[in-house]
Length: 400
Image 1 (cartoon, rainbow, N blue to C red):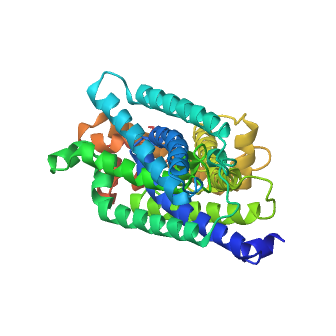
Image 2: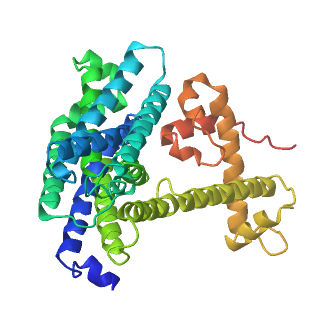
């Protein structure tokens, strides 16, 4: 059954929802990357919560004018206006008052969301029909999505991708080096407003599928997930778009099998599953990679200390050290050094003597700062430098 959902075999409406969610996920992942890099993830939360009053007011106005209060286009227009006002409020409070951005976001978020809940409560008391279901904008609701709705999502997603492609350079400058961006003639305020405008578009069109409460997760989770896999900003954008698209596609397809469950939470849970996989398995920053790196470092420390103990004729007491050196063929089971062990111990002691000379000589200051006590000296110095240091080591005097 899940295979049928993933292969778009569950009917026309389910196919529209799945493709629309995938497009929304791609746009959200790409747009959210710059929010994440600019360290303004919470701004998207304020924008999303600020859409609720606009949805309610748009419904009331459309009903008052004799129209269909549930028109998605009209509701999204209202959400856009309300979100833009909320965004401008955050920007004004941040730039014109002494409030920090977090305080401004908290104030706008709570006031607009509270106002929106009041309006929804008023709508429920109206005699106009079709007011039921507006609460679906809180957690997302894809029931009854039309072809026009899917086309609206596709157009909005394409517009977001085009805008990100056009503004990629200033957005990256503002995220990584705002000082240089201003020196190069870019206005940080305009760049930030442009970024927020892109996020606003994604937030508004995502209300139908993910809902205003969870759209922030679709904006941020793909970017955080992508960051585990690369250090390059352009690759983070691409990977975040892929993660967002996969989250939307798989989440919407899965929700088609359980129509009683809202689509938004399932999409977010799929995105979280991808984040969890990245957290555990990514080769650079994953938990498993960190554990393996620590384990390898621990082995190197034990081996080094064991070799120095052999070179100085001291017994090896640490069980792990003895086990590692025995597996490497450096000592026998009783702790006696093998021929390879004696050679490695002599080399380790020689390196310690060399490093003592390097650290005492200011001409080798750059190399001395990189000394970790484990890496062979040949990896930091040239053969000529090593030869020069060996000349300084006093030769043993013959006993007469």
